[in-house]
Every structure is written in C-alpha cells, then in structure tokens.
Length: 512
Ligand code: XMP
Image (cartoon, rainbow, N blue to C red; front, side, top):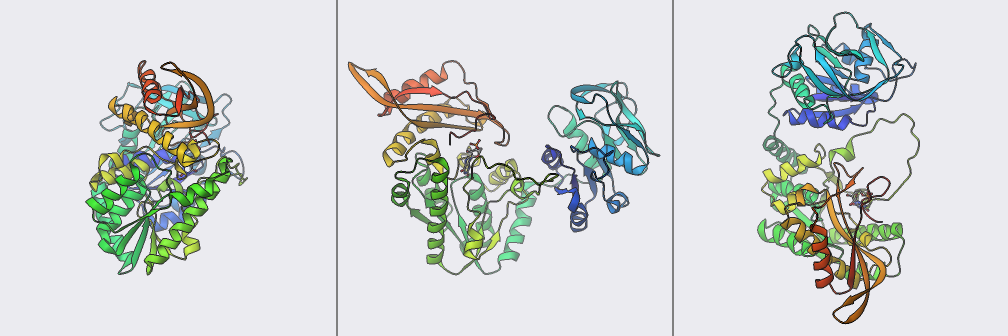
C-alpha cells in the first residue's frame, strides 16, 4: 500500500484515487498523525501532498523524521516537494509571482516516473499551482523536467528513490498525471497493481465474519447505492444473521419502495422489515415550512422508528452502515474555526450512540465510484448501482412550503416523467442528479377552453464530481420543451414548467 501524507491540499483525495486506479491500495493521513498511520499500515511508499502553507514560515508542517529516514520511496507534490528540499538541505524561496494554471514542461532526462510515458525533449501539459519555489536542490537530486517558470518542475534522486514535482499530477488538467502516479506506485515502489474489487470483496467478507462471529446485525436500507452494497456484502458474509430495516417515510420517488422490497426480499431472499411509516411522517410534517425544521423532524422520527423496529427484532449487537471513505478521512485543519452550517444533512449518524450498538462499516475505505464497482462485482442491478444520489429527507426538501401527501403524489408523477425521458435520451449517466421541485406558487394557464390555476414545477439537473460544486446540465435543444409538454399534459395540478440554471455555488443542488 501507499500512505499519502496530507498537508492540507484541496485535492489530496484525488491522489488516493489515482493510486487506487493504478491497482494499489492507498490511505490518507493528516501530517499530524502520519507516523501512527505509517506504523499501522507499513506501506511500501509515501506520497506527500500539496498544501496551503509555506515552508518558510516557522511553524509550517514538516515531514516526520521517521518517514524521511525510513528508506522507502517518496513522491513529493508541490508543498511536498518544497518540504523535501527544505528538510534535506536544498533552498526554497518566496515566489514573487507564483504560477497557477496550465503550463508546459520540457523533459530533460529520463527517470523512473517517466517510464514508457515521457521521453527527453518532449513537452507535456501539467497543472501548476504554487507560490514558493525551489531554487537550490538538496544533495543527490537532479532536475529531469523544467519550464521557463519552474527550473525544477520534476526532480529525482534515483539512489534514495525520492521524486518530486512542482505541479499537481493528481488533477485532470495534468493529462498524464495518473500514469505518473501509477509509475511511482508500480515501478518505483515495486507494487503489483493487483488491488481489485474482487480481492476487496473476499478480504471484507473474511473481516466481517471475524468481527461479527455468531451475532446478529441490523442494516438500515434506504434504496441508495451505499446501503444496498453494504447490505449485500454483509449478507454474503453472514447470511441470515443479517436483517435489513427499510424505513419507508413516504417521501421516496415513484416505484422506489417496491423496487427495494422486491430486490432484497424477493430476489436476494434477505430478511427485510418494510416499515410503512408514511402516515406518521405526513402527520408530523403538517404545518412545517422551514427547511431545517423539516430535516430535524424527519431525522428524529427516522431514528425513533428505526430504533423501535430494532427493539422488536431484538438480539442484534451490530448496526451496519454504508459509511464511505470521504466521511472518514480526517481533514487537516489549520484554523480550527467553526464552519457555517448551510444545511444539516440528515443521516443515521446519531443511531449507534443512542442504541448502544457496535458498528459494521464495510465500505469505510471506499470512494463512491469504488462502491459502485463493488456493487457491480456483487451483481447489484444497474438501476441501483448507477442511481443518482437522493437526500435522506427525500421529496420533503423538494417541496418548498408545507409537505402534504397530495403534493408528494403530484411531484412523484412529474419527477417520474422527467427521469423516464432522461433515461430514454441516454442522458442519465451524464448527470450527477436530476429531479423536479414542486413550487408553492400557482400560475394561470389555459387548457382546452378552460382557465387553469395550478402549481409551477422547476426541473433541475446538474453535473458534479462530489456534490460540493455543481453546474447546471445543458440539455439538447428539444429535450426540455418535450418534457414540459408531457408533464403539463399528464400531471394534474401542474400547468407550468421551468428549468433551474443556477450553479453551486452560489446556489445549492437542492432547493432547501
Ligand atoms: P446541496 O443541496 O447542499 O446538496 O447542494 C449536496 C448533496 O447533498 C444532498 N443533500 C442531502 N443529503 N440529507 C442527505 O442525505 C440532506 O438533508 C441533504 N440535503 C442535500 C443533495 O441531494 C446533494 O447530492
């Protein structure tokens, strides 16, 4: 495996992904706890991330001495390069202008990172983002690539197997970056590149069996890909010691509850408790219009219902959760200041404490796309594997104002038409999330010879890689008019359809 020491770059997670894409397992540890992670993992190589600090500041982060002295291969990226030079006897100076954005570097010499990829005299595109720069190399290093602004764009010490670069190989704007990282993992560290989902599946199954023994496990199923994959994997490990609980709050999309029940109970024969709690949720939501109040009510009620079911089932020591790696990675914090809560995301995070259960979290080491790969490996149907993210509070946060069963039913019909057309046009997988929002606004229309006075519907579709930022999706010209016509013709209660072009930021993906 490879350990990635995080110095606080915004894109450290991408390094881990590139290493894993090369078939090598990797984990990220903040520089403050890198030594513990190093001792636990016993990695075969180290990557040092970029970061916002300057090595010229007295209290800036350092590479732990034991890691530097370990004799293992090291790849330093941006701040990682500067820290290496600073600590190994080179000189780093304040950059007066800095370099940000696309740049071309020229290859001056061969080195293991360039194997079967880059040759002398070629020019290649990379992504630079740095202020300070290395002005004198530490003993043992030689420059192997340069640009007018960066004489030490890539440096190498083949003897010690330490390599470093001023640019960011992990971002897509460095087209060959993944291959550079792959060369480091395979050629420099000598790792085989055989980390696959088939192997992960086998290892996890053994781990789950060892952890759970003969105890019983309860898993909350939502119909989303994370909990579905977690449930399937655990079921494969321990069979009927697993019971799934599906709390159906009546705020799901059309046909979704039926799909979950028929797949898990029918197809996989996994014990599944389907709690039909629509009335409870609808009654409680009556009169609530504030988005945060909706989330709080739904979150709390969800936990109450789940807990009551778990008590009825009885005898389970373990709670399974589909926690993913991005939720687990400790982030490097320099300021420690509180960040503003934009939305309090509802999840079942409060459950284990309250229920005094131990956790089984088989997806803790995986990124979302790896969970999808694992789902495919486990034979989960494509409609589940490729499903767009769906918020825990469901349709409640897609109905600004009061949520009623009548409004949910109208929204479900319109949303189903929208998604059906998106799938028929072959656009579903190009979109991160697509959904309809039922506005508490009425407008005047004409249908046949009559006047209508009905709701306005907003359609939203965004592209994104992680939900943190998003762009409105551009549909082909005739798509939206066709969907709008179908919805107004087929869904009673809606007589006008609009499209939301706002990106995030400044908007958010959901309307509440
Ligand atoms: P926003 O609207 O904050 O959404 O741009 C970012 C991503 O998070 C999802 N989302 C939620 N997920 N509970 C969830 O489990 C919530 O309360 C919630 N609110 C937003 C949203 O669908 C998008 O994928």
